[in-house]
Image (cartoon, rainbow, N blue to C red; front, side):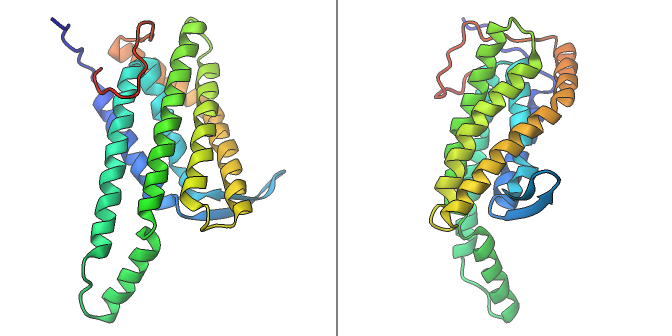
Length: 236
C-alpha cells in the first residue's frame, strides 16, 4: 500500500497565490510593452507582465525547495489548466453577440483590443511557462542535491536564470512575432530576462525568510534524491 500523503499547512495557500499571480501576469500585463528611463541603463522597453511574473518563479522556487519537485509540478499543471480555461472563456465572451447601444459597441471594441489576442498570448504563455517552470524546478532540485542543501541563494538565482532564459525566449517570439517589430520583440525579451533575473537577486533575503519559515512550520526540507522528474504526472 502507498504511504498516506502528508498534510501540509501552507501548500494550498501557496498554490492558490501562484495561480492568481500567473493569471494576472498573462491577462493584465503581458500584452503591454512599457518604456522607462532608468539610471545607467537609459531607455528600457519591457513587458508590463514583469510586475507579476517573477513572483510566480519566486513561488516555484519555494515549492521545490521546501516541498519538492513533485509538489511544484502539481502547481505548474494547475497554473497551466487555469490559463487554458481563462483563454477559452475570454474568446467565448468576445464571441457573444453585443447588445445594442454605443456604450456596448465601444466596450466590445475595447475587449477585442485587450483580449482579442489572448488565445495567442495564452498559448505562448502556457508553452513558455510550462517549459521554463520545469527547467527552473529541475535545476533547483538537482543543485540542492549537489550542494547538499547549502547556498540557497545560488540555487534560486541559478535556477531562475535557467528557467527565465527558456521562458522569455519562447514567450515573446510565440506571442508577438509578426505583431511587434522583430527588434522590439528581441529587445523586450532580453530586457525581461535581465529584469526577471535581477528581481530574483533582489528577492533573495525574502526567499530566505519564507523558506526558513515554511521549513520550520511544515517540519520539512525535501531532497529529490529518488524523484521521477517526468513533467507528465500529477501524483505527489
